[in-house]
Image (cartoon, rainbow, N blue to C red):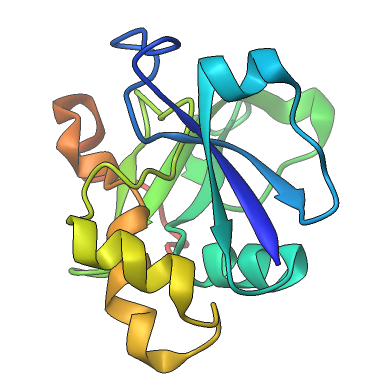
Length: 162
């Protein structure tokens, strides 16, 4: 089994973190200190740490860098020679429309259980992490970068968009 460590009311500090943000993943054998159990909330998930990371990778938005060549002023997903690199920007791919957007305000913690209703929390705590019946629940755990207006500008002028 895996343990997930969450921000709670003691450690909440908007806009940097919010109650329910996932800040750590631990093996079942990990023993939290008394202070950790006061400052955070721990939940046990049915599955291994490796399975949890696999699940989280499957729901994550793709993030990459684009690079500006000094010699041409053009942006590209292909990293130029270091001496020709003028700038770089992080971008993310929206799964719903399959378009790339500038990631100007990334989340410090990209996963949260704050969006889940109590029955969904019970489902992830009591159902094997790889069970397809909890697919939609885990989709809600991934924060959506487009919730921040700074991350809603579609990239343009990049010739080799994958």
